[in-house]
Image (cartoon, rainbow, N blue to C red; front, side):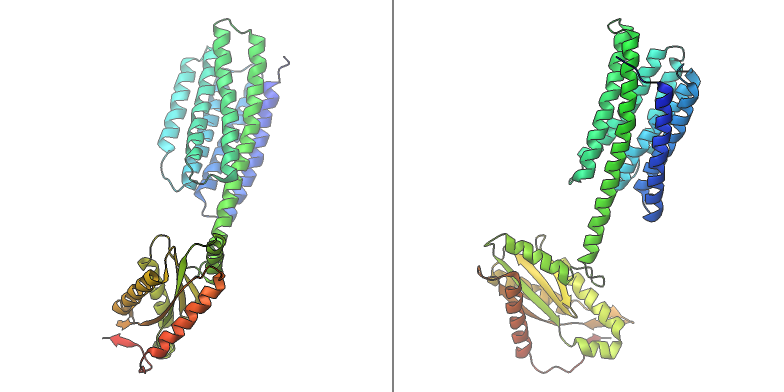
Amino acid sequence: MPSLDFLTLYIVIFLNSLTVCVVWAAFAYRYRPNPAALYWLLGMGLTVVGGAVLAIQGNAGAPVPAIGGNVLIILGFAQFWIGLRRFDGQAGGQKLALAIAALAACAMIACFEFDRGRAVVYAAGQATVMGLSIRHLLRFRQPGVGAIVAVVAFAVAMLGQLMVIGSNISVLTGIMAFPVYYALASYALLCTVFSGAVWNLGFALMMIDRLQTRLAHLSETDELTGVANRRGLQIRLAELSRQGDQVYSVALFDLDDFKPLNDRYGHAAGDRALAHLGRLLSGGVGPTDFVGRLGGDEFCVVFPGTAYGEALRLAEALRASVSATPFDFAGEEIRLSASVGVAERAPEENDLDVVVEADKALYADKARKPFRRGEPRRIA
């Protein structure tokens, strides 16, 4: 079996890592603050330095640069795992990473004059941190394509390191000739180099998916109130309609005397009132219900799997909560009231028809109310 030149492979490690460093530096700068990208950049930076140190040893495998370079690479690979933790919103991990690197360094120093022992420690250290990354990726609730790509790449690289461990043991026990081991080790290293490029591609895909999800959320969220905007509401209603004959009801809420409130207290008070109403509605619905703002002071609450009678009861409870919960503005507590209209989707109706029916019920509710003073009630 032909073997590959290790010095050339070490140079490939250096150049490949340097290239990926540029990518993570751009991510970390462009999308700051981004802890995950910073740790992945740190991991690649340590791998760059480790690759440069390994290149110093040449093909002869001088012990000091071999130990130093491999410890740096093990520590660099551990930063990929820590970056995954940060991507998932978890702290910690650095103490374990340092402990693994320190333990590997001590074991390699103990095997200073024992090449095969050092090689087993190199491979075991790298396989350990790869295993931590695989374990973390497999725990993602919705892994996505990027996480799957990264898992496969880590698994291939880990398999290469396990092959190095097995072949070294085979050499020690006389099962395998050294030239065969040397060739296998060179291919295992090449496998790790290119697997590293692939798992970093997986990380980049994960980052892009996260950014796209955030952009989609922003495009479907009302900035002032934090509930769904008209677009987000239409998307969710369309999803319900695609489920066939599932029953759902819609309740529309409209603040009473909203214009007089704006005229008396200013638009800042009006914004505060809308945000207050959004919080009350969001906090008062069930886990499967959702709230959206259609525009102005009109809000929509959708009750999946709920018939008209139950939806009317829930809507009246929400209206009572609005009336009973004033909000503070400029030292005054201002009490709101709302009109409400409820409609249940008929099997033949589309998602817009039920909103139209609820809107009719809303204006019927407004018409039933007595003449108002034309200004919001306030509590001194």
